[in-house]
Image (spheres, rainbow, N blue to C red):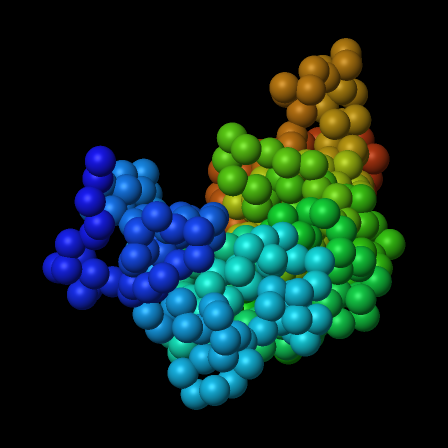
Length: 363
């Protein structure tokens, strides 16, 4: 029969003498990760429980559990009491488990500060507050800061007509916090999206061009109102950059309205030359007119319909009258000269005060 716990173990753990119903004079209290408590009255019993994952309860922890007070004499809350007094945890995934970590550490150490440290190191913190830790697992917000920032994010979303509790936003919430985007900046980004896209009369084309120009190659996505708002969560997408991207997309939209599907490179080139919506509208409107006329002249000259591959394209037009490429200009000159002979029309280029050729006009 196993004998009582030896003095070396007794001296290092909390021992309760005269445990009612125990066949030993002294017992050691142990608990597992689920906070199940058992007692061991012999070396063999204790070692078996320790090997099974139990941990011996210290004198302080035992006293704290028995009295319900910490080392300072303050009442230790229960999990339900803590949740009732901290409404910011209400409804959050893993919140109860997180509080249990806090309460158990408070009981174990008698220190509310150490209990808070344990809570912030818990795996349940990220579950309850997505994005509260950085990529290295270090908290970058207090719970109070997180909930305050979250409230401001939700206000910004609501003001722009977006439900902050939509599932897709909940899924992306961690990115929003981890990128540490200031709520005021976030609101500004949302306004750029609202004014440049969602309120645009050409919204569908803007979305199409944004998808074409700025989605990572090989990974096209369907741009929806909701998906567009995710752009505001990107760490590098400040309001100025968003505005620039939408202005580039606007150039693509104006081209599309005139029947041209231009590349991102062409739109970017025009933007960098100082083109905006007005210049793009005039340029592509004139281009549509001139290219139609040159196609008709080509057909008239050859005496048969011209295949699409033989027609002059928007790329040819831009090379001739924006880039002022000599060969492209020669091609248009040859065709328009033939048109002049046939129709007695003189076609020439008109240039803006800044040196941009915005189209051709018939004199």
